[in-house]
Length: 301
Image (spheres, rainbow, N blue to C red):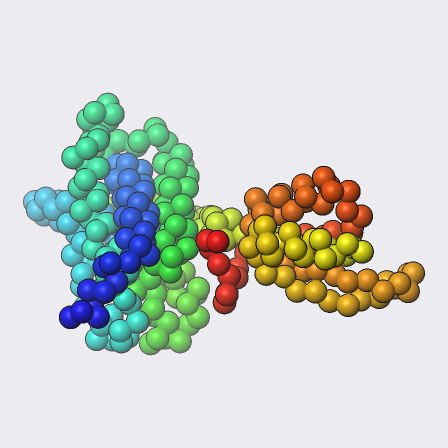
């Protein structure tokens, strides 16, 4: 029991809990304000829940979309436990189960009627604008969660099942699962809105990649200078970053040089360039973006 409760006393646990809640709060707002009113069915559990809610309404049963979201995610988590093992940890369980309650939170705090809308009306007045706003907010939410190795649950679990039993790669599995959910919209939406949902699913994948890369972006900096020792000292002592030093020879001049390579955040890179300029250090510097780093990178000094 002590080992189970130990993480509760760490700053990392509470930081990630707040981050996951914030990410899911943004995602819940995207679903509540932009997806449900327009009845847009994107390749997600939220989209499938809207279809089920509308079908139940046709037979006289009124069930809130948020309740269906929670129920489907709970069922998928149980299925995942038995069908694909214990690969979905506490983060996935938490994010999957709070989406529905957070949608109810937005309904209680800022419902449609306070914004001058009624259920069933487009939030932005046009399905395309609703789609773009939804994708923007959901992609930000997913990028925040991916940064701490969490996810929104639902569709990721479904995609993992497709991946395991039909042997598609995980990216293709997400696409297939999303497309199948989009096609369920034929039961409640005209052809035009179904195609709009498919386009939205594709755009969401592209946007998530963009935001994820932006959040993780670092600078790979290569510096060739005769005053390499000053630059190395600034990187190690002031910026608290590691660096690698290579002996090299100029292809044109044949002169011996030393090159410093390091990975920095955007702010640290700006500080380094300012240091080189202020101290009149003669150097040849190149820099490129790196979107993913594994291993001994320190987020905080």
